[in-house]
Picture (tube, rainbow, N blue to C red):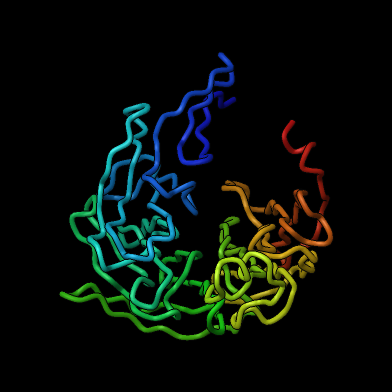
Length: 313
């Protein structure tokens, strides 16, 4: 049983020892950052140190420097800055995705047009090159890695969203690829997970970020890229068969002040089920729902739901 945990909260990463019942602040984020959007556990990617990675995530309207930090599995409690995007390139980092097939990491950035993109990092960040940058079309939080291709979903409330296929990646002086739209999506995609070969992701219900702050916090009007008031749950296999598993209605509370409507996922190793946490939805708010994957027909079926309080035990 694992007795050591790391968790992110309110501007830092904390170390928790279940046996000794001790909690201590291990690492403080930069000023203005509360939490990373995604923390990555990286193992067995050639050219990189095994460890825990995160990219800085704050509003950063001025496009100041944005860094990636790493905690090695071998050196406990020590966080090291391993790469920095120099100013005027990106706003922040959404996710860092390991790719053992191409011996690289994919760095997903946003949110302005100039700050949005998909970047390849190799050789412990000695090489960092853009693959797709400069459009809302390349603003992503969710990307799935397969041997012959990549799949990503856009995350923009400003424009229509879609799932895209990236293929034929060539690593010359400049990275090139072929990109094809697979499916239009009913909203931005922030959260995703892998359950074996399956790419599972959800869309969010959120307001237009161009609104002034007070209106943004209190409005119930959805952004242009959000097509309805439902959080949609999808599952995709490696052959790009896509199935909508569920659609849960956003509650009546303002999205900016009381959180977006989302379905979130823990990191998991199971291949036959996926765990979903529902946030700001009419049904299942604050609950975990387990879906069983049926490999025979590439479908998911609802298995059982759990109250949040029960899941903590």
